[in-house]
Amino acid sequence: MPFFAARDGLNIAFALDDFTDPWTRPDTLLMLHAAMGNAKRWFRWVPRLSRQFRVVRMELRGHGESGMPAAGAQFSLQHLVDDAIELLDRVGAREAHVVGNSAGGYVSQKLAIQQPGRVKTLSLFGSTPGLKQSHALTWLPLVRERGLRKFLADTIHERFDSSADPKLVEWFLDQAGSNDPAFVERFISHMCTHDFMDEIDRIRCPTLIVAAGREPIGNAGAYGEMQKRIRGSALKLYDTTGHNICDGYPERCLDDLLEFLKKHGYPRTA
Image: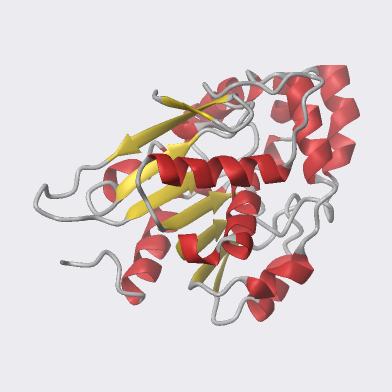
């Protein structure tokens, strides 16, 4: 994967996939994965999207092949937002459609709030305005006690429902469970300080909110409030307890995303 050096010198990995017709000028679509994820988590999404958009997948710092912030170095949600802006600059995208999953959606929301001119549309999957109104801090002693993969396996019902392919679940456990536990604790602890519900009314672009209607992680009750506060936004709730809808229901998510983009005139034919 290619890298770019962020302002603080940390290497940020990304992937770029463009299988659009070569005589077209496609819009850029930026994808931001969940905590403990990486760019590979979008593997079922990219084939369809990259025929219509130039798809850029960033690996959040501390995840995948991106650099790991040193224990004594500063780390914040703002660093992730700045990384996303730098990546758009790097790939020559003045503006982009932004798709964020869970923690990647926190980055996406902040990007749309702070840099409205850079975000054409915003699509949020399982992503509330921060993690403060959740029970995520209770995970941390369990991760220390059991190990990250074992903790995820023991609580897998919060992420996948009974319809999930067992092989997908095992792949998820291997991938997510391979993250550095110390950084995961740092990442979650920081995200649990954020609740920016009072800021999201500053989001002005067309916005799609998709979530598990009965999930225990992202405070399912917040999604209706988000729709009220983000003017003209669309809300879709899936009848499932599994937070990981991007993994468990990729085709349905894609259908809803592409329908939303088409409604707003994308991809453009010219």
